[in-house]
Length: 120
Image (cartoon, rainbow, N blue to C red; front, side, top):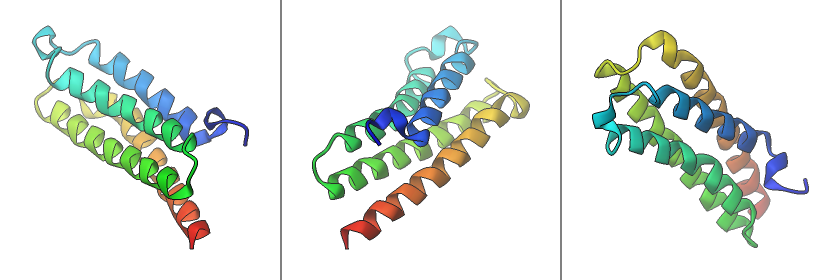
């Protein structure tokens, strides 16, 4: 692998950010600095931490940044649930994003396990 850009989990995370931006474009304007902002920041944090961790010199640091990316993904999933509960998005609109989140979560878990087993 030559770059973090070659990681499928990073590529899918970029797709996730795009979907979140498209979804939040229909949110009420008064949410611009609250839930909309939180959703965008947590989504952006996932590929950003994957990339930053990849660039670190030490495997333990890489693992730590992948764990942070996973935490940001969980934060995003929570905010998506809140968005649905307050009526900003419905279950049908949310389904593709939720499916992608689950796929990314599995990929991150697998990558973290693989990296952690190589450290031992």
